[in-house]
Length: 168
Image (tube, rainbow, N blue to C red; front, side, top):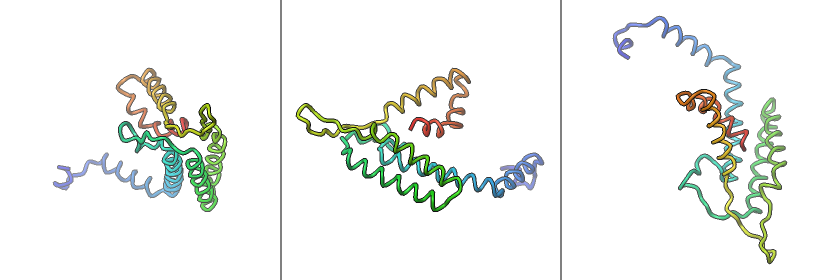
């Protein structure tokens, strides 16, 4: 900041700034950034419908029982929307949206299993992502063992979003 106010330039910083501007203006980088943005948005939509979004943590989480039939209808709506959006955009996003659809479809039985009591009445249960939380904890623990305590946060921010995707 002091250098800029006094019209002094550090050549290394200016060179780095030029490289960054060149990279940001690159067509491929913009394309990949857009693709990753779509994919992250789609995963967040699915997670929000399933009520395992990052917004729902700790005390904020709604621990009310869920109606499995309504939730199933909502997830199918989100899946169809994602697949339609992927087909509309095309390219790699079409393949990714189809894969998201297939993965969600393959987990339907376990996600929306009906829970009945002894009289055969359907029970609404509190659904949560405790297993995913355990997977995340396991991943964090092993990253800490591999890299050391000081680098754990850096590694988790580097790969954290992908770990969430794989734990979904």
